[in-house]
Amino acid sequence: MARTPRKGIQKDDVLTWLGYALPVLGGLLGVAYVNIFYMDFINPVWAVGIGAILGWVAARLIRKVLG
Image 1 (spheres, rainbow, N blue to C red):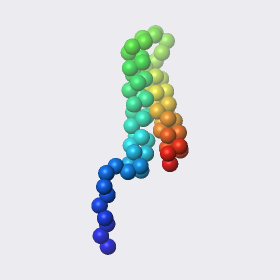
Image 2: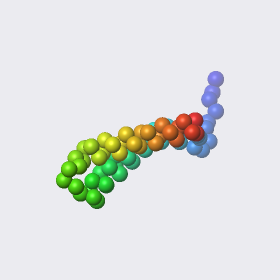
Image 3: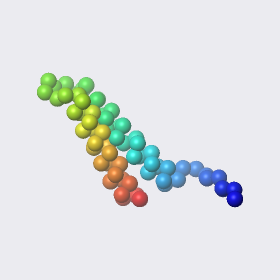
Image 4: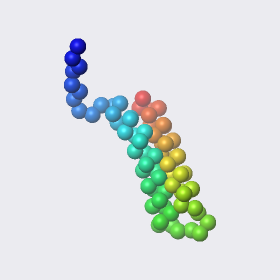
């Protein structure tokens, strides 16, 4: 049985993309924050990790609302 081709971007595609993109964007924003607002007591690894976790939480919330 042949599968019919999909047309365009579907909701599931966007939700899958958000699960990967938002943690990466959060980590990138953590790097940017450390580089813009340099403070001696902030470890850049913590800023990247916290940004990635916040991005993951945002992705989960968006997926719950849309999904």
